Image 1: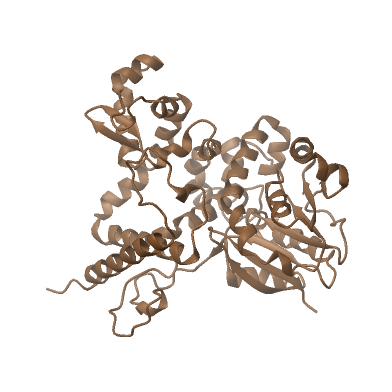
Image 2: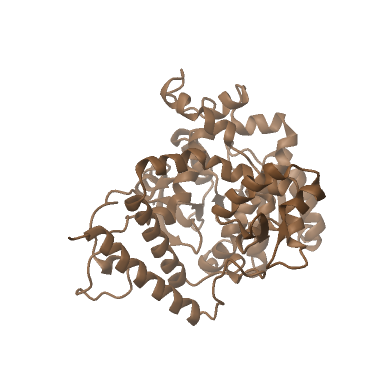
Length: 450
């Protein structure tokens, strides 16, 4: 009996894993292990483009295998209960159980739930299912019956580590999304003030206006966004050809805490930089920059200024190039075009706009058979065909998750290259190049269309 799809995926998975193993060896990376008590360089270094490609292949294969093998009802139950994965990890972080496990005198053995319950004055009968669900999702290890230890992944949540700042919960927005899309008075609206966010928070304000009136939400949001930015910052600095820019000043529009421009200045000290953001944000950013880069602030190399993206860009002419990172995906086309148009009107002939966003790939052939040479480095035509989604399936799930999240928050979305071209061309610009990064994002380089 022929098992065509299963056979193709098995061959593809084996080939992808073998190639990944070789590329990791060539890059002198240690073996991956969930049992290691030492963090893998994967969390802090930039892989080669080739290595990242061959990480996507097995992830795509595994996603397709799960779709092929798993019962549809089990798959649906997985979806329904997936919200508990985030809630369980949040519980371990909020209680500081994660930190306590990290301080275990015997990391390989872990700590018994009875001891955790006693230490934190919690109910052991609640902790066991929570920890086991975390273990099933690959976040901790159950070393023996009802004893748990950290693994490689969970170390990112230890106090002071990056993952700790990914702290926003979207559950209230998720719950109301189906009714918003199908039943609400706003189901045909594309306004950023008529979304799941307004329903969940019982407010007429769009998200950013609501944050301005609820400043207690600003710091956790800024921390959350900084982590998302930091995930791509090393690749942006390394993979875009900054030396080709003909303008001496880089303006980061909506630049938050200034992490990106400071990284660029460290790597390319010939530039000057300006961080622009909302007034309540730049107060925090200005204070941080005076503390961390006092010389740059005093000398004028780095400036921080308030600017509303929906107002005319005050920095005009050949002296400036502009960054819009994770800005335009927040907004529907009308508002995105207004923001981009304001920057476009400020450009000189030598200026560039660098749109740093995810580029969605339409999954038009997710079940089609594709030639191996379309995604493998070996172009031998005698190799069998494989079933791999055009957008790498499970390996690109995050892009689609971001898109739905932006939709629910602001009626925004992650755009395909065709959609980016339409938006850019409509603002009197042209795309001069697209630079894929060793991250989920790309740099879409734009200039005046003259």
